[in-house]
Length: 66
Image (cartoon, rainbow, N blue to C red; front, side):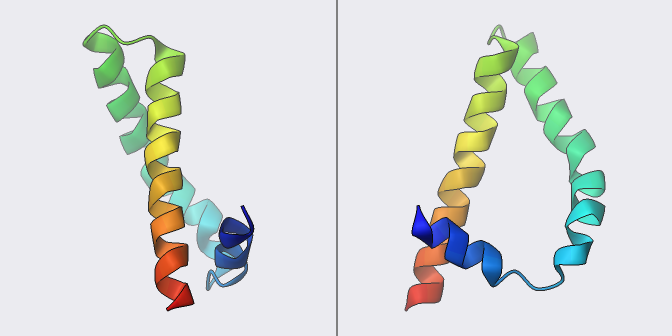
């Protein structure tokens, strides 16, 4: 898990994270709502979105190590 911590520390413009969240949150909620519409439980849909995001962060942290 140290890779994620190292990556987070290297994120430029930490002050813009709240702006980014504000911009992305409606889109993520739409993805979750679509998944629920397809029959997936809301918590499961949200966990999958979080898992995908986590995988992406880990991939980025590995790229930074090279």
